[in-house]
Image 1 (cartoon, rainbow, N blue to C red):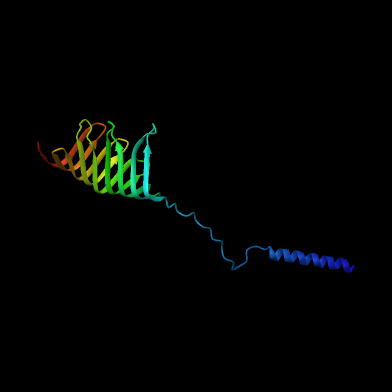
Image 2: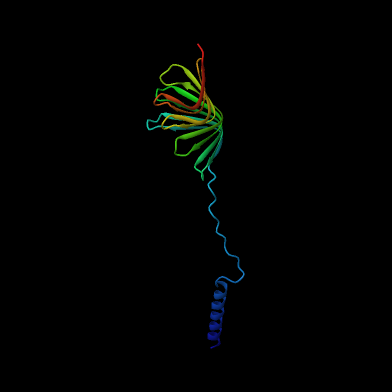
Length: 186
C-alpha cells in the first residue's frame, strides 16, 4: 500500500515539474526580435568594364570607369571617370569621356556629366568630329546623342557652338537647337 502511495506521489510530482518547466511564456520575458532583411547594397567596383551586347552577341557599347556603384533602390549605376565606346549604324567607332556618368538599368540611356568630350566620324562624311559639352545623354538603342546644355561641334576647319543638340547617328543627322554660332575656315 505504501508502495502505491509513493508511486502516485512521485507521478504527481513529475507531472507538476513537467507543467512548470514547459509552461507558457512567463511575465517579464523579453519578446523575440525578428530581424528585417538587410537592404540590397548593390555592387561596386574599381577599374570596371561593362559591355552591353546586342541580340547578335556583338557589343552595342562598352563602359569603362575608374569606379562604379550600383544603386538598386533607384535602378541606377553611378560611374566616375567614364569612357564610353560605341559604333554607329555605319560601323564607325565613337568614344566619349566624362568625369562621371549614370546608367539607368534596363533603359539603354547613358548620361554623362562633367567635361564631356565625344569623338568620332560623322555618318555620311569622312570627317572626324569632336563634340564637347558639360552634359550629354546617349540612347544606345536609338543611337541618339542629346544635350540641352551649351555644346561645341568641331570638324576639320569648322567650329559650331549652340545651346542644345540632337545627333541622330542612325539617320545621319545633327541638329543644333538654338543660339547657333559658327566659323568656317578654308
